[in-house]
Image 1 (cartoon, helix red, strand yellow):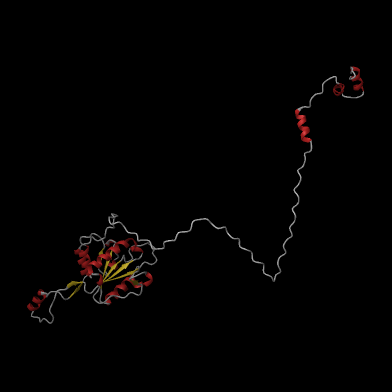
Image 2: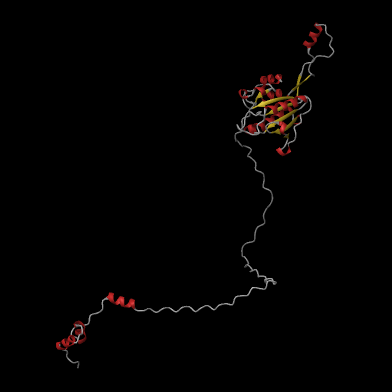
Amino acid sequence: MAPQVWLGDLLRAVAAGAPPRRAAELLGLVPEAAPAPAVAELVAAEQPQATPPLPPDPVAKPRAEPPPADEEPPPQAIPMLPESSTLPLRETDWSPLPSLRLPEDDQSPRPTPLLAPRTAAAVLHAVLATFAADGDPDVEAITRSWAQAKPLRTLPVKPRATLRFGVQVLVDTGEGMQLFASDQRDLVARIRSVAGAENVRLLYFSDVPSRGAGSGGRRTWRLYEPPSTGSRVLLISDFGIGGPRFHHRRSTTAEWRAFLAAVRRAGCSPIGLVPYPPSRWPAWLASSLPLLLWDRSTTVSRASVAVRRG
């Protein structure tokens, strides 16, 4: 049986220096108070935690010593790739692709030719033809000689327009004529249909023919040579009128005059077809050779007048 505890026991414990509350709890006079949760958590946090063991140190591998300088390193084996289970490749057809053709019922607009289609053939014939003294007898000249009692040493004949001497067509591909490239191709096709492809010699040049001309690309151009005597020389050019304002390759007046003089010395008849209006023609050009406006307003009569001036 547990001994009884009295208040005197508590007084003697307090007199001995024990805290009153703690002494009463130890003597069983009051129940012991449970520790506060916050204090319990702080106590648990202050407890040292177990440290996880460190992994063992890796065993150091011995480093391979480099081979001597006089020995070559052993070749390394190339790893073999695993076999693929993909499908085999199909053989490639290297035959050329068929050419792209426009449908027969293509209704895309075509560029309008600069010469009126209805009179283009007659205008070109008047421009390309030269005159030969092999026409009909000139009755008026014969009658005039008889009336003046002059002997006829040669039979007067009327000049006849002919294309039998051929035509040399010089197409300008310079800066001032870039806008008329498609019109030039159309015009050349019409010239060949009028004069006959066998009578037309086509040459290309840039700015002025004396710098070089040829029937192919620029690399094939050579020094210009006039055609045979009696031929017509048709110049499809702007004669330096168009193009950029500061075009460094623009032809000069001296170059054109020297070229036209060489053509006439060869016994040929030059004529120019210009896509710019007469208001832009320089005076030296209009006085150097017959010119014709390359425009739909050009008529056969205007072409004939221009040819007679030459």
